[in-house]
Length: 56
Length: 177
Image (cartoon, rainbow over all chains, first blue to last red; front, side, top):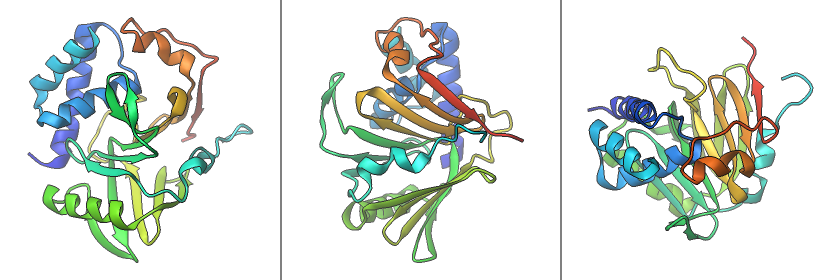
C-alpha cells in the first residue's frame, strides 16, 4: 500500500468512526488517534476500533 | 482575505529558531514535528507545539535539491526526518494563498506542503496541516480556508461528549475561488 493509500485509509477510517460515534472528531482527537494508531501501524479496521475505544 | 487576514507566520514565532525535538513519519505520509520540552498531558508525553502534516502532498528539498516527497519510500523519508532533527531549526513559514501552498523553512531545507491531489471530495475536515499550540490553541489550513480554535471550543470534545460549536472560539478565513 502506498503512502497516499494509507492517508486515504486513515481519512476513511476517521469518517467511519465518526459515523459510529455519532459526532465529528476534533483536530485534537484525530491527532491523538493518529499518534496511537501509528504506534501499531493499524489498518482501516484497527483505526476505526481504536477511535471507538478512545472516544466512545 | 478580506480585512481580517490571519498572519500564519505569527503563530509560529514562539518556535522560530528552535530545532524540532522530534520529526516522525506516522501513518502514510503524515509527518509530525514537535517543538519545545515534552511533558505529560492527557496521559502521554507531549510537546507544547506540534505541527502535523496531514492530508496533503509535500516535498522536502535541501539547497534546491529534492530529497523526498510524500510518495517516497518510508525508509528514505525516515532518514531525512532524522537529518532534520539533527541539522535544522525552523527559520520561517511562508503561505501562498493563491496556490494554498505552505513552505516551512528549516535552515537550508524547504518543506513545501500543497493541497492533496488524491482527494476528489476534500472538505473542511481534510486539513493540509495542523499546528497545535499550548493551551489547546489550534491553527489549521485546509480546503475551506484557514482555521483557528481556542480552548473553550475544544473542551466538550476533550471530555468525550459530543462537540458543541462555539462560534466565538473558532474563526475561519475562507479561501475565495
